[in-house]
Length: 589
Image (tube, rainbow, N blue to C red; front, side, top):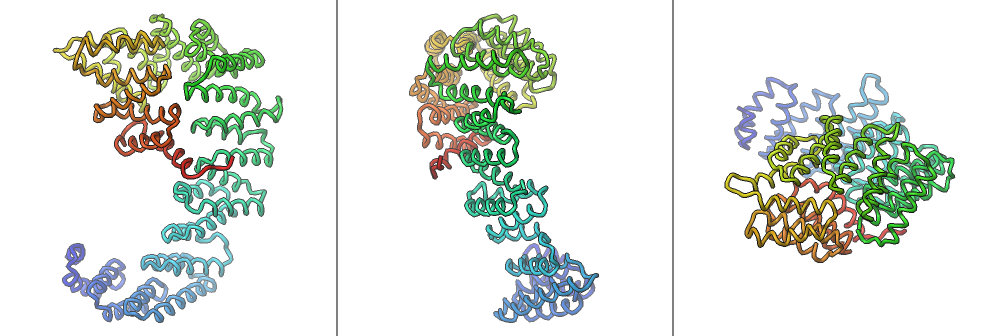
């Protein structure tokens, strides 16, 4: 009953019951705390002082009661007495911990927690720091102090404490990152953090953990040029032949920081052809160059020819082995999707899938690529056979599910909508969110356009247009799409047509037209299933092709806030952070 009165804010009723309960059970901390809270709420400070003073006398080994007494003095306006009490209890507690074997150091943490409860963070820190100093244990109470610094906003102290922890225990690196991530993500005291880490590096060059921490800070901040310089220094200090540069290149690629990735690979190559990472660097450099020019879709024929020559040179010099398989895959992509020399691309892929010692998952991925190439050539039977093989070999694996999705799409292209939908419905629960999302979208498209009262003629033509788009026969695809609204006016496919035309125009480098059609999807079908696809595609178009970073930011922000369950939100947040950081401060090259 007392607790019910207390929770309902009827302190005048609760205090009567808690008074009786407290007399019967002087040891219950729960009853004591609620009783004291009632007295403070009712401004009965004299009675509160009386009760707490008795607890102080009864429990000399529990300094938290003294903190409560000091708090009451502060409410009475006697801050002088409050501070004297706090200073005395800290001094007394530290003395007992140091001199009495039976008096545990954890009492200082109990005292610190009592101070924190009353928002007395300076005293909370002092109780721990004074005990640490008295016992001569440099990292004692480290996590408790870190928690206090976080709560009180003492971020420089937080940084110093984290670095001190690493000095004594390098295995705490992941815990340190977790403690600092709040500051790093919000760009709080970053200059101080970098300065302090650099000082520790100079003082303790043998402690590699500070190198790792500084690299982590640069990467989290998306300061890739600084990270590059740090990786060069780390590889030099540790004589690791480019390991840290290779690792950084991978991170840069995932962030579309192609220039820095290439610098990393090129630097590794300077360590010599006998270096452990030399081949990785050579292949990585040319593959990164490929990704860099393909991102903007603004390459020239000369650039394509130069890339082809680089890939062919690497393949010839490294010989026929599984290490060169990725380079052959990229070269096949160049032939198939950009130079439109399908036979050359197919021959490369057929060679790759036969390579010995190739990891099974890579072999499966390359078979899928070969299946796509067969479909590009209209060799439907060979494509579906390869998709089926991968589906069979990788059951319940994302690779097998991707194969099943591609076979379902192939059936959709050919107008076998019932079979395609059955396969897509199975994939709705796929372990890969991307596969599940794609399956749901295509399944809904088929369902919405194959009802009992609906003709499938429009969907048949639209599916054939999408196949032509996949086969890079863009003009033929566009011709069908242009006629659909006239042949089937007010059809439910309108948003799909807009989105498909936008993709075609983007491939044709008619970026203003692509922008127009993406905006049509967003403006006219903003609540439909394809809206987030259009917003994300338009954001990338602004960022990579139209060179309008501000509009890209706006689109990424729109996706994050208006379509927060979208599959693209994670990448949108990443790109938003990179663009926002770049717009606020220009990093020194």
